[in-house]
Length: 257
Image 1 (cartoon, helix red, strand yellow):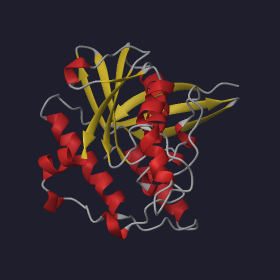
Image 2 (cartoon, helix red, strand yellow):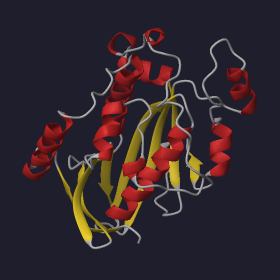
Image 3 (cartoon, rainbow, N blue to C red):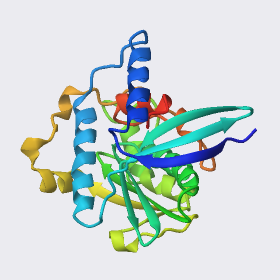
């Protein structure tokens, strides 16, 4: 039976029901396997998100209600869940949602599309028009097949061939690259994509304020090289893995993001 959504509402991080949900999740985590310590790339991912949210705030009126509460209905059961929207702007009756990622694998785009398609479906309970945009910081994504093949014969090859950017964009025609926020579309068959370089984040925040010592991290790990979903598969966020943020992935699976 298909998943259905109901009773959606937007709220802030200090919402009492949301805080009670977070505390319950923290309690459950005490008896679970510890999440690995954050790598430099993990830390940079969080920093890049904050930097790009500030950048967005200079161009759009961001809404403080970034917590989306909703009821997920499966079969005859219903569960209240929460997800944190990386950024939200509501202008002229349109809800603009932004998913911010920093990654070295183009599979991040697939996962972002899955998240945003689901988020858009839920927000349609509140807004007639919902536009979605991925802000992706490229920390080493191979641009084409030749670049991906070169990685596989390098001194430290990844466990499996990473997806090049061009292959993912070809497989996901609903994803359209834009160079400026003014070019974004709120169409239901469109996911907007803006790419940023690490140098762009450095220019906005300053290198001294960013975790850039990536030599301390492993070149690749299992989370980075998780097999991507099929091009037509837009899975529930409960099946999603956050590329460079294991805590975010755990929160996602618990219905907190």
